[in-house]
Amino acid sequence: MADEETPTPEEARAAIFKAETTKQFASIGRFVQKFELLVDALRRFPVMYLSDGSPQRQRLISIVLHEQGMTAAPLMSIYRNMIFEILTQEGAAESQQEEDATTRRVLRHICTRVQMLIKTRNELQHGTWFIDWAET
Image (cartoon, rainbow, N blue to C red):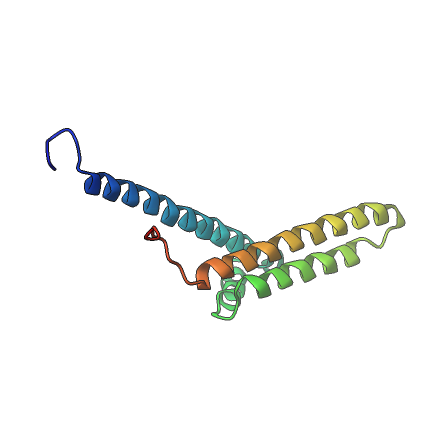
């Protein structure tokens, strides 16, 4: 530093650069972390529903759902198909039809939003990043 209290223009620029790039990396990290919580929830539903509370069955189902190919898209598909199947089985009563139709609309909306998140996550995760300042 040129003097103890006043940073040089280069030092000030470096400090701002570090703060701004740190914020950018942190934003990406927060999104990815929250996305992984969503993926975890998509895994937990079939585990809990299919296991009937049996710890051994939970472990066996978890093994399948944690395989490398079980990314967000196939997990979302499993989740959606299970919910629709459950509604089909449980929604036989005529009094349930309107409620089931509402549930299906909500589920479709959720699925659309999750698909958008999957697309965004893939673009973030697999994109080419240049977190930096452009030279002017």
